[in-house]
Length: 297
Image (cartoon, rainbow, N blue to C red; front, side, top):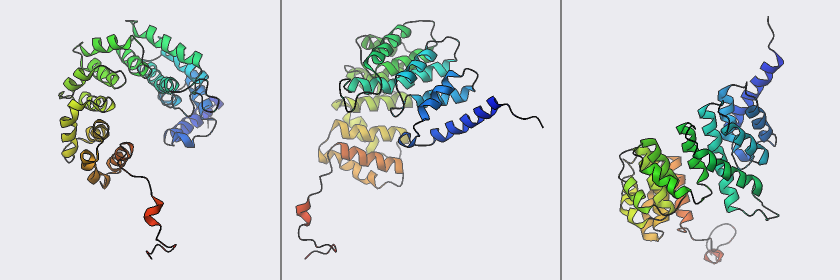
């Protein structure tokens, strides 16, 4: 019987490790997870499916660092790599950009996962690459979707151009980007009327993020008719309802969804109510007459 080579054996082990990591919450990943992703991404002879998984997971806040970000940049900028892998690498850079943009590089206790130098390097590279017309459409779309996680001056014009293109996939990217870049309330309201389910869903998320009050009747109706609203759209609408109007009377519509048999819907409603401040903090005085057994004296 012909024995497998060591390389084949190692790759098989890596494939198993990747699938385990893919199905494990990031906070439970071993400390070696990042090195696993690095090894797979740098092995151009590794199966494409493995490299796609590694690229997707490498952007998670738990593992991303300057080294992984550099590898993702290298893949994104290599014309010889597949469009799918380059697009996935672009997407993976988004969370790192967002966390660095929101964080404080001078914080000694909790600095961003990437350095300030790497942060600006990613921004410059994405900006430059986006305007390369030779870049595959999928990759350019993912670059815009990723880069808006840390807003820059060029994003507004890029979003307007994408939205006005008349091309369905570019409109979808534009509406997604509107969730991160302020100043597109009118376009968001237009997109809420789209019959394309993906565009519609992204418009709901954008309306919620920017608390577009004019979107309230539309978003409220989606939650009110929860039995017929498609699940992805309903989940987006639940979050938007709690963002647009946070008074208790408006949020009562979410109460019955907390008891939904669908765990995703129940959790979304519960989280929305919590973020909107609908739950009051536990008050010990309410139970001061209660003994240790739980009975009221």
